[in-house]
Image (cartoon, rainbow, N blue to C red; front, side, top):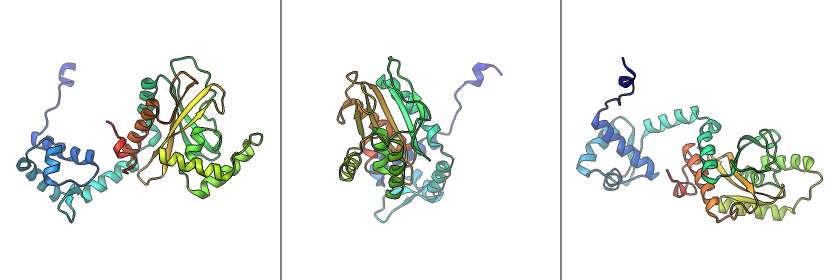
Length: 268
């Protein structure tokens, strides 16, 4: 068989394609929808949509709640759990990291919480010459870096406090803000969804960091952009900050974190 034949688009079943439109519309909404709402979202007449929805209920992909609205059924939840169990956050985040670096022209780091604290596991270098001192394997301060503070803001209290003890040992020569100041900063980070560091801890380098959550609502990882001070707007309400939060929201959505804090920001 020729290469042309191998790459010929496969023919599907039109009715199943229509059914897929309805499932996709419900997933995009992120909440139960009435027949009319779901049909409009799928750009389909209610009379056409209804038989598909009946079939989806029969096989368990959809069900109807007490208000009569359509939502995910038992089979959909089971399939979702299977997908989540096979999901590798660090692998899934890779394309988003690359895209974020291309969109901003800045270096992008991804960090997870390791045995010693926030640890860089991926670094996409900027095309611009920059003196970013981060390397894969770098363990970051929970107090003095935007990535570290973002972890501190979202970790369970006991985990955070143990990590802060290690941080104090590792950063013995650095001054530590009062506990009340730290708590106030963590609250601000949780409220805004992002943190920044201006020429700290590395002079001349600014950072914007945002959290990514998993399907349990726990912090999965933190992504951050970094660049020379003055080369980009590193304010918390800047366009760059919004791009970083959008990337974090897309990843959180991908990892199953359906919440009011992530869904409104999601842009496909």
